[in-house]
Image 1 (cartoon, protein in one colour):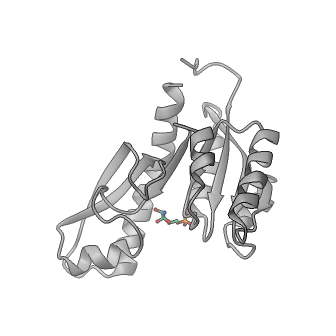
Image 2: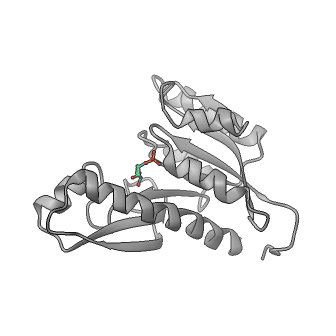
Length: 194
Ligand code: GRF
């Protein structure tokens, strides 16, 4: 067990492809005195990912990975993860699938946030599908990553009620607010069990 008073923090890499609000939020949480983790690296497959601006702003190392060749991408990622002594990888809107070998090497150390109540609504366009199916609830899930898409063991989940006049935009905004509460909580939870 890690002592909460211990100085040694767990090194985190956050993988993003887009806006990066979860990244921004994790950085904010990591700056708290009692935080058990430090964001050491931001990885993206997308040079134009808006979220990369947070790496710059908070002076965190960032690496852009070219995914044209999967094997090469894996070699590069592993190199940077080792260099920064990364303990846990947090996927936050990362739109590429990780290789089975990378997942094996970081077994139990890669987590993801997904905007639905898994195992329901794996994959993309979750909010639209949830609304089309007239579900009463949706939400968000933080789970371990395994080689199957959005199928790893669930760490934490938060339910969000769907309102009559909900649109994808409105619902995704409310769920994102919950994601920002859930992700750091789930991360702290798994760190405490290390
Ligand atoms: C979030 O809704 C997350 O659940 C999903 O991708 C979105 C990323 O949002 N995996 P952001 O880039 O963190 O703002």
